[in-house]
Each structure stands twice: as C-alpha cells, then as structure tokens.
Image 1 (cartoon, rainbow, N blue to C red):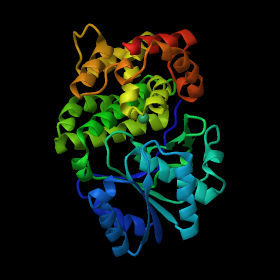
Image 2: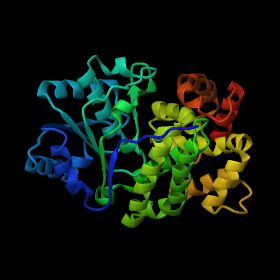
Image 3: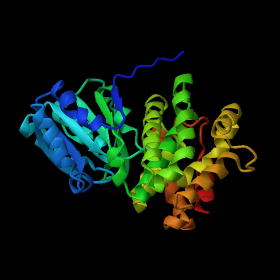
Image 4: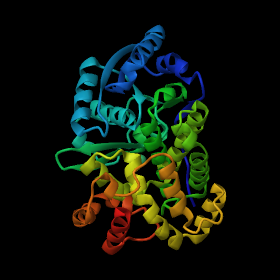
Length: 374
Ligand SMILES: [Fe+2]
C-alpha cells in the first residue's frame, strides 16, 4: 500500500517567471522576496521580480541575505523582517538555499518561536503562509519538496525543518535564469539532483510512483548534465525538469547514504552539497546492489549502461570526471586521520541513514568513508 498527494501547482517552461504577478496576486498582498546575496541582484532579477509583483498589486519586501548552506540565525533574521512588515506571502528566488530559507522563515514568522524550535524531529503539519518558489539552479528540487535544509552553526551540523505544511503552493520553473549559472555550480547542483534520484530509488520508503520519478530523473541527468555544464540552455532546461522529478522522488522516499554521509563533508570543508554527495554515492552502489539487485538492473538498463564492469559505481565516477567534480575525499582535503571523526559524526544523520535499504553498521560506514578517501 502507498499513498500519494502533492499540492504544489507547477508551471514549467520559458515564460514561467512572467506568471509571478498573477500567481502572487491570487495568494497575497505583501510578499517577502527571499534570495541569495549576489545572483538575483547581479542579473537584474530583484528589479524584475519587484516590477512583476507591483504591477499585479503585490507589495514586495526584499530579504536578499541568504548565504549558501543557510544558518538558523539567517532564518530568525528573515522571520523578524517578515513579522515586522506583516507579509502574507513568500517568494523564494534562488537555489536550494534561498528556497529552504524561505520555507523556514515562513514557519518561524507564522507559527512563532525561533528556527531552532522547529527542526526535526518536530514535523510542521500546519499550513504556513503561501510560498511561490522559483528555482535558479537545476539540483535541489526544493520547489516541490517538504524539506528545508539548514545549518546549525553552533552545533556544526546540518539540520532540517520538514513537513507537508511547508510545501510550496506554486513552483515557477523558468529555464531562463539558468543561463547565468557558472559551470561549477551547474555541475554541483546537477549531481545533487542525481543523488536525490539514486538515493530515493534505493530508499526503504520508495514506492512504485517515486521510482517512476527517480528513474526518469537519473536518466535525464546522465543524458544532459555534461552538455548543461558546457553551457547549453537546452540541456539545462532538461536538467531543471530532472531536478524537479528528483524532488518529487525524495519528497516521498527521502535520501539516505549520499546525503547522510555527505553532509559532514560540506560542514567541515565547505564542499558544495552535490559534490559532497557524489564523493560518497559511488561507494554506496555495492550496498544498493546487494540490497536490491533487480532494481539495480532496472536502473542500469534505464541508464543504458551495459558492459561497464564497475556498473553504477563506475558510471558515477565517469560522470563526475566528465563534469569536473572532485573525485575523492583526498581531493577536498581529507586524510586517513579524519576517518574516525567522520564515522562518529555519521550518528548525527540517522534521519537519512535510516532510509538506506539495509541497516548500516559502523563498519559499513567506515568502509564507505575509507573507500571514498581514494
Ligand atoms: Fe540534496
């Protein structure tokens, strides 16, 4: 038995951004526009978003202050602005960081308290104020997920605000902003989408429907990420669709080994999230194949991977190399001495690791990190 429900209205394709005014006017009168610090301003999108909202009779209040891997403090500051201004709507424009921050700001401003009060194991069931999400990268899928991944800088740990209450009401997926995405970010975010697809597919919580999303997302990433990194807007458009599909998959099935063991790599060394996941994921492939051999065959078949002796592991490594991602933990500054604390830190990410298709022992986790060291 499984259930499926997804309330987000999706508008996909060129021109979707232009729908912002009418979508916003249907949902509120005053919007907190949440963005990162540079991209939106640099490429003229703050003015454009402000113009579209005003023209539709919605007053914008800007919060262009979200850093990569947003902190609980940033969320609290955003919520202060939202409360002071009395906004009744959120517009998130950016990558996962901006969208995730907007969701959590909405929770804190609408339901009270501080960001730290709302992190998992608390679950936000109550509907917060409407959110319109406009992704500018092709990785996170946050525009269609119930997750807001944040960093607790005090404890040095990635944490999450989660619940159906924070699912965006509207997702406007316009490929146009992707033309400004630097190659490295295109590679890192695209690999995040791939990790969502593969991890959701091999998750304990996977359903036939989430598998449908995950398989197609993985196929599209292998077919389109290399040309997306080289700058093709057509390929980036396919990637935007793939990252959305992968978002649907994790919204049902969650992530597991790549994310659970990858988060600390970002916390400790600042490695972009998608690169961090792919430092781990090839070394989880053996566990996935052991736990679900038939599903592994189906995935390889779908990807058109035949005759590669290393199977999925090798295919992932080839893709990493093609798009210029770091290949090993050593490449990003880890050594043998770091393995003990990495294994210890993995205990903080049980939420993810519990979705792995088999229960992982400490030795399994150590084995993955040792093999990822290279
Ligand atoms: Fe992710």
